[in-house]
Length: 509
Image 1 (cartoon, rainbow, N blue to C red):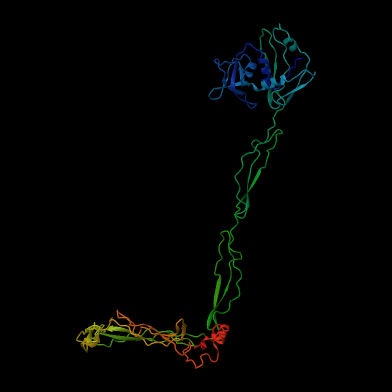
Image 2 (image 1 turned 120 degrees about the horizontal axis):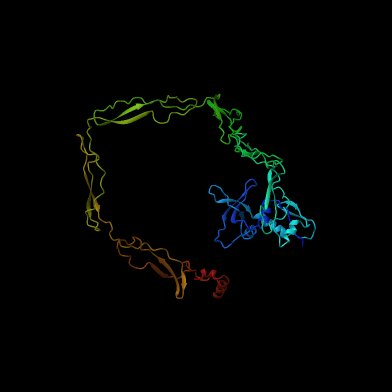
């Protein structure tokens, strides 16, 4: 299979391919790398120490065994702490190695894309191919073609390399400046937003805006403009505006109040044209207006009292008296059928003299009669008394004593709660004659209630009923005629009684 050599785009990648064959230069391998931006070199830090188990003799060994970047030659410290060094990154080398491993020699002419840059390939052998295929090679090989410029715009670098056989003097890599275009395209970048403007409306929904300028940086050399809008608008003051209240037109006047004399008529309006809203001020003024009016018929005027006149003199020489005052129903007088003044036109009150008047004595009410002083339940006459006192009021201030006696006496009988023996009342009428198995009888009764026994009195003696045999009478006590059955035989009477359920047995004697 023919070897395929790629003219590398990146100067760093070319160095990988060349430095991997050198054996006389010092190599430092680093664990971490800080990529540059095209104008500044890559920076490496955290070098693998000699105590580490990994040892590297070439960039290829460094990059294929965990290294992030490398330096061949003296270390050049960068930064304030002097802990970073300008170096070559392993990343292009790894990508180039991957691309080369995937390349085949199936075509005589092909192309490989590295970092979006298309480079020509050829399978024709060169002096470098012949030099590398010679195991007894000595000295330098021919220089390679110059690499493409490291930048597509602004100043860059081109490299060419040669291969050392056994003993060589001189450099294995040369570089020169190159420029494909004087300026690189610069895409525009937005500057900071300005502050929002004042809201376009004080209320009810407005808009506030802010702007920005595409000047960080300004697009140049066919760079792209900034993406997005230079103007930003936002709603503001979305709360509804305050609405002050407004009066509706006045309504018509009402009818005059009342039915007679003077009155009032009114009219109204409402604070609803518009109604206050959202903190707006209420309407100014009154919602009601009144004016005086009158009816053709005067109203009744009820009477009113004047003020009271002065009190009269007491008019006494001792004790308690009275004095008077008057008023008149003239404020106003009753008119047009109005009512008179309520209450009295005269007022009376007590008045007192410094010298008390004589007070005559007056009897109290009689006390209850005392117990009768007679032998109980004997019917003998005794006596009882009752009293009263001269204290209603007592005689005072030389007043007269009570007239009459303070004790009163009268005869009495002590028969309360005495035993009352029972007494029979008169006999009642006989009942109708009733048959029995020994003949016909009639009954009468009496009550022990004349008087009824009381307070331990004896009951009546004797019986309270009497039975008498009926002779020559029917059951109603009517005397029987000579013919007992009124012309009926015994058999006929029995037959009649059976047919009439015994109705005719009243004629039986």
